[in-house]
Length: 231
Image 1 (cartoon, rainbow, N blue to C red):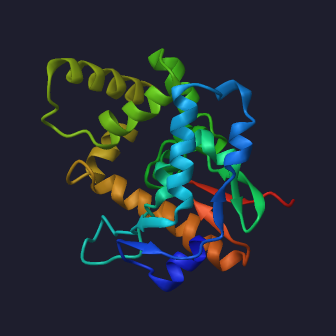
Image 2 (image 1 turned 180 degrees about the vertical axis):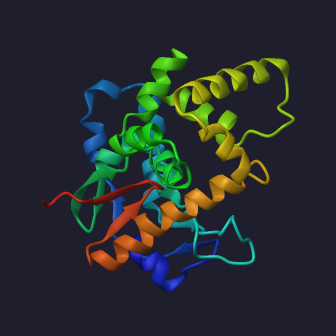
């Protein structure tokens, strides 16, 4: 389980072979008719078998302060596992459910800005939906572009096409959340400093906070947790 990873090797990046409580139920995948006999189906089975072999590499770097470790996001096989496999994960013999915090990074960011509307939209979980509608794209694309062109943005954005997309996001943010885009630029000494700070706060909640609050085993995937589906 994740608790055992962090207790035994809390801040290392290495391949380990240990008896974990986490497995993927390949038999249940085989029963899923919608993905049978397709390339996707065989890829899922292959990923499951590799996961169940229990050779795991994981790390928890502190990207804000590289001299430290064990404070930032946890990068583990769970983070790279196909999302379609999550319903088939067993933790200590029990099926898991997923709980996440909607638009977590923008929500944490709202603590550093003055915009009342931004605070309301991020705390209610509406931010990415409004961004999706404003940019006339999918939620996944809107989220990706928010990170790329708002949180990671620097003064020398590359190709002219990227500049056009970046300016669209800048204009939308400026129109809907007065002062937020400018505040992000103030907080960003380089293109990833702010995100590193926000993800470190996120990890302190979803790893350290949960470990203090519960003895039940859980698995974190950045702004989400997989926990036994008993209640």
